Image 1: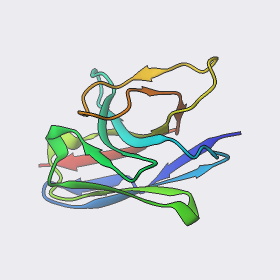
Image 2 (image 1 turned 90 degrees about the horizontal axis):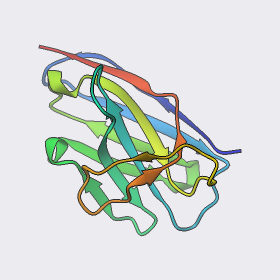
Image 3 (image 1 turned 180 degrees about the horizontal axis):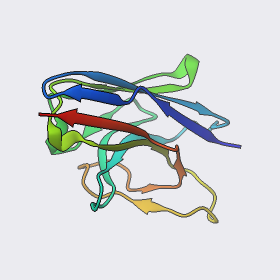
Length: 132
């Protein structure tokens, strides 16, 4: 059974930093896309950053230069380093992966150029709040 568990969220002031972690268990695909996504109240879920099994990274335009995605394959952990946070970054942040079974609900993400679009494995989310 695939499980994704995020941690590291919190409340920071504008300009601050946070590092999110996502431990992924039971996921054994050699070809994959994984990433970080967020959803603010009243808004659609959107992509933030992604990484594929070739190590290529992708970012939404809104976070380029401020956020960095990375992974520790030995620890099955995905990270998101966030710097220079802005109030508009306030949202619930989720990690997700593809390759889910056909029976799983799929969320389509279209705002990260060049990255995979369909994700069925999701964590429970971690809240990030940035105050001005």
